[in-house]
Image 1: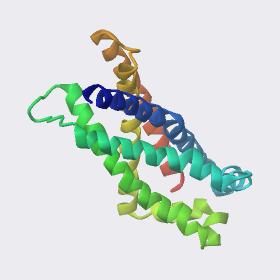
Image 2 (image 1 turned 60 degrees about the vertical axis):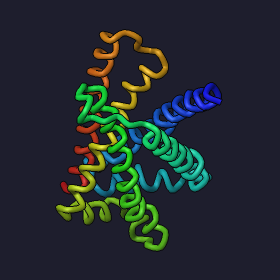
Image 3 (image 1 turned 180 degrees about the vertical axis):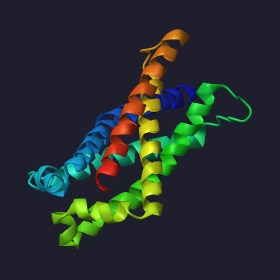
Image 4 (image 1 turned 30 degrees about the vertical axis):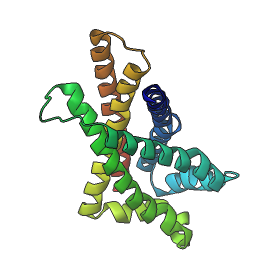
Length: 210
């Protein structure tokens, strides 16, 4: 029985990390790159991003099967891991334990942010044609509110941290970085990647306000 539970946990941890990288992590990178096109103005963004995506065949099945379903599975497995683990960051004050705890907290924050973001954009756009034709203007209106801008900034930082730290953890789980020195070096590389990705995301947010 113990071996069976251990094997199931082993498989779930690897499925969780794979889903976090592909397609969830890849979509985050693509989405932030999309939003960075806002720096070229409303006409460019609405034409090259919004119209291009709406012109895709089978857009809704792609959104559901390639983005929503893996994201939900990743979240459900992550919550199961959070339930079974007790990192106790105040008792064990080493960096890896803090990162583990922040990974779980950021995951919960991301879920709340996604409900807000998808609700105010994709869902609201289903019955508001103006949003579908001028998403740039809609995002400009949203982000002009300091409270919403702050929520989006927090969601961005949480998402980037979750991906960057998840990459460092994935390398450990999959046995890519086996020594402490290799883990530290890769963690710094992931930190640099996260900083670049966060800068891209902030640049895109500010582009809607230009």
